Length: 351
Image 1 (cartoon, rainbow, N blue to C red):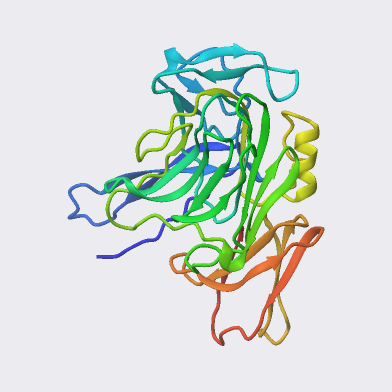
Image 2: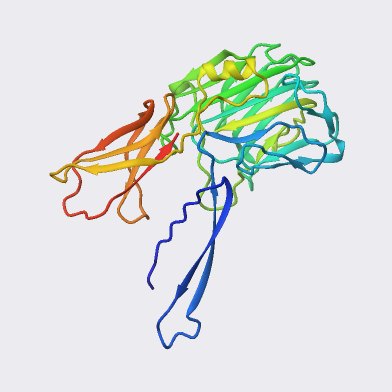
């Protein structure tokens, strides 16, 4: 048996894209010489914004994503929601309100080492803001959990590690609050470490944990059922329905800097002012001795990257991680290339 690796890289318009690979055999004894394989993948916008729900929706079942990435969500128990409520994120658009029953929202965001969540909320009760669980079968192992207590305190967990347990009235019941959570993990999954996690309330840094005080998002198990669904307003592990008004939920695949968070609070409903320069490798060069390779890609200050290499598109090895971005473009070098290697492929991962 011969294995042929096929790599499909969706590009162009953001969202789910599909392709077909047709394999034809010239073996005269082959009874079915043609095979067709269907491939699909998700192309992402290059600005770090993976999901944006303005929550201007007029009714169920879909929560509309306007990021361009087609990450629409679902209103659960949709007929019980109140739609077209006055906005609480500024004066434009609408908001939605959960008043009773089993009302919550579902999403399937990308699973990235670093992330930012931003939401405007006016809670009328304590309950769950966000919840993800690692193992669907066991209904346990909370991967990411943010809750508001009955006294307005905020509690947050990553990988069952408590990161924040704030004072009462951090998120006062009956009042509008802008909540932003950022998480930076510059060395990616699988290292059991992360750089920092931050909590912003109404545009200002409220709490921060660093190094050993924070935790890394776990990777999904390779075998057995797992759950990449984000529960908004409820916990899969039971209860926690948050009654109140929701507006303008955003998710980013990176840690937003402090000035961007302040700007989003000052301009309700606006997304972070990140540029849309295509994220791509723009140059790979090797010195005359064939020993060192220089790789350059588009970048923006405040972001971090991991560089990986492969000789067959199958196995990828880390060259360097935690590479800090420069303005416009970032360049790094791989030293001491293997003698006799005719082709090397590089990829850059934005953390």
